[in-house]
Image (cartoon, rainbow, N blue to C red):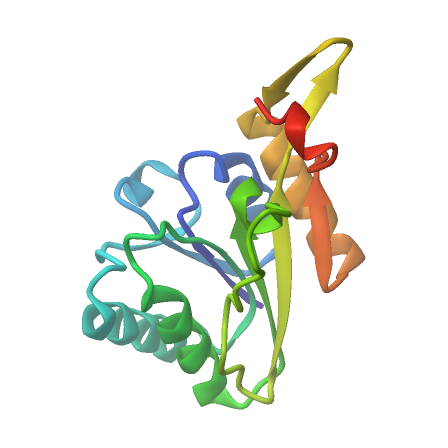
Length: 174
């Protein structure tokens, strides 16, 4: 079984390592993926759509179709998520795509933006929204461990929309 993590060495590091224990291959697109033992590093700048697509095709050729993808992609690369989805669709094999999004995706003062307009028929798209924690009269952002655990829980529950932490009340956001 083959999993893909885009942005898997920072806040998703623990999730990446957990996936490496349960998947035959975990391919990781990240600036420093070489530091993770037991993973297939894809050294590519995901802002370069052609290079990203080529790297994903090579990973699939070497390790088989991707069944699970977790993507934390910055807004500086708006074409990266559609590129990943299109490449996942090429195999025709069922795949779950978990799109990790910041709390701004839950901002009630803005109109909801579609995160992914075209989803291949074999790809099940899921959203994981990163919220915050409220502790008494204070609030704080999630830790990397909370983020990784929350993303893994979202994968396990396989819900179309999953919030890690809370996003309401919005005015309590740090």
